[in-house]
Image (cartoon, rainbow, N blue to C red):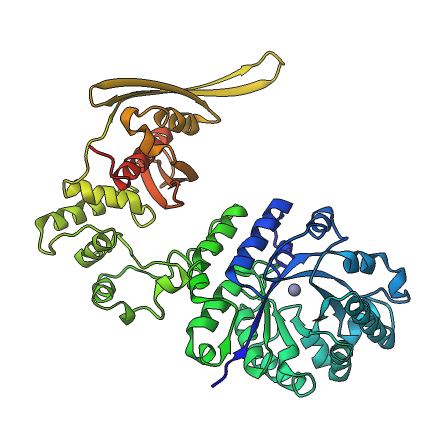
Length: 531
Ligand SMILES: [Zn+2]
């Protein structure tokens, strides 16, 4: 059976840029375009040329992409001609393969927001599509408020959509701008639209205000639409847009869609999805959603002992798809409720072979429980767990000893009369028979300590040269005078591999030191540095 093509349209850089707290720089936009292109997204909407300097600059650049790079903007203003509209001119001049116009399709908005007549709005759609076609661009029309408009005046909403289609627009995109439409309504209304405009010219643009943007996108496809618009990680104003990171694996891996449709994403590219999702969050300085379907760190994590033992025997017993398909991984949580089978499964995952009746397993379990009770979080710190496990099993060399460290924080007035805070750390390390001393200044005590510690490890220095800290998280546990601090440090090496370590202490410097030490020792272990 020949499969139909479903096209994916990404609007992370345009609609996603409306997310509270998100502000893309030109470098961000270029990097995200490259990621989306590599993933195999059919259309990437770059922004709104003419509306702000970043987007104007982005659309002034030459590029070499497989994706259809799309500019977004309004149809000509009411009462103007296409040749006398500066906004439209900027859009037509932008270096883009396609232009996505947005137009009102709800008669109420035409009257109240545009303050024009229904006929003039239709003429504006026709003229704008014609002008962009004349410039050789592929044309899309986003019908704003289409579903609400359709419910209020189906005839007029359809007139807007057909005006664009008849004028030669490649796609007519039905937008649920307020995000309040439910899947059954979407399916019914799209079903009506495709009786007039062929489904392979119809797109869906859903917002997530009832948490059904993904479901609404699939409802539209079921009814015949063949383009889905959405964003990476569901970015977007209010509750976000349809999340392409959830939509893509569902289209690829779930039989209902996989048997009927082809998309532009290969199996190889799908394996990059978890990485792309996390890389975007990192760029935006947002914590990745651990519970994100398919790609979240917890998406294939299991805690209860009985599940863990079944997963070890046969993963399909508790997993709807294999985590590797989207670049994710299975995780068996080591936690307070951990049973022996969890520990065994986790040891297996990190590549430690040990007999299941080995008495040391029981001891490791006891140590994990004790340490978690005082604040260690091995669930989040896989590298510290692996070190603890290897130490308990007697397999970690003693590479070096830190015999002493000293951190000094000083605030003073500098020569320019400014108040400055200066931090310096001194670390004494014994590597074999060598006693080494390093000092470093940092932008804070932990940074200074980290720099001093990694400055000179003698014969081990070459193994840690590519190590860098990518995240540092502090949490104060159980408050008051008994408060302890938990520090989680994420590190990355020259191969892009990442791991997390943990430290706990009443003193934040000491907690940080433990996590830093674990990170360095883990790196030496991973690099198979000689003991
Ligand atoms: Zn939108």
